Length: 136
Length: 419
Image (cartoon, rainbow over all chains, first blue to last red; front, side, top):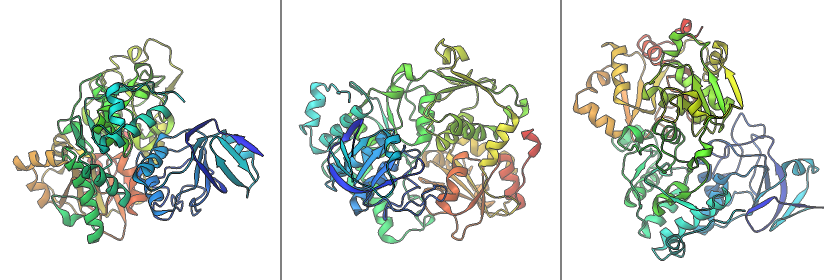
């Protein structure tokens, strides 16, 4: 099965297990920049790990320092392998662009139909290639 | 995705012809502009940088790389808080390695030509762009104040984009830079609140918290408040609103420059919604700012955004020469502190048990005594961030309640005001 992105903010190839966040998140205060763990006690996914996943999030909220958390995750190697966002958030994507410029590596960032992602079964893996998202 | 049309000058910058740092900065601004749907970039008159606060070594490496490549800001630029009180370094608990990284990050921004203001209230440290001016500001309360109270135009520029705009003197022509996005869509009526509450400082953080939670980035005009509201009330409203939701701009009829009246704020169009605030709605918003019940009090924290001279004066009137039973932390900018000290205004309050924190604040770096407890604050922003960032429980109350509680050593609140 294959899905198409609405928009490609940052193009690239990546593959990993899908992880769908149950609620919007502020990376600043919500994700530990050193480990990639969700740490906001009020978030329904608190305790989950986003490192290495194809991370699907309905939208990002909160602090504009979330770009700094994204950059740090990429520097220490605990970032997701791709970001699929229901509603585009320039702040997270900005962290990825700066990581690319700093030589920490970049990940694909895509705007997607979040409802289509939400309908996928649990425990699938996704491969991202440009605007294509392959489900396996 | 929209294609951004770059000028010849902007293309030269992007190619690195003015140096690698300006090249990096222009590529970041142009790429972001495309995501935001901008067709072009705008010249900006000034910038305020939030990226000088330490979140990890990558932020230090980024700032050091730009500074090391000779980056210089192209417009007047102020700096938000760092993670150290440079005037009283012992105030912050950090190991030497972390302290060195924090300091290196702050130094790199100064090396790029930013003014070392170290305040989240740059607008009370002389940085006040004229109404209608395009600027690039970071830090949520500063953004809300700049748009709403000064009438200058900025989006919520996050870490890294803020300095990239400052280095290139450009920002994407999108969002709140565009007049059509600045008009109010929603009217908030406050006539059902008592006139005593509408005239109390304590209302404004609670009103802001309600606004942020209810409307997020939707622009609203608030009607029925006293005309020509004090700047510090608008500051408190905006800071709370921007902590609870993505509020970048609000209007207050009769007080803010784009709202001489409700119709003007609406741009002559009908509102999409009108919400009549009730005392119960405001009480609920106020209550949501507290996580503790009971009267236990271990410290009082004031000054988010940073205290102004007028706020220090109000604090001293309320203190009326009395001493405090618990430590009182007041956060302020070094500019305001210098004026306060020059007039000798700090001596009495220090003797009474006040710890004045400059250049930083108690929710972004470890200053409150380790071990936790209950902290009381008159700031909606402190109330929002205290539990997650400090481990303390929090109680919100107006400045008068905070001062009275600190004198007694237990929490006192004027409940009658909120009916």
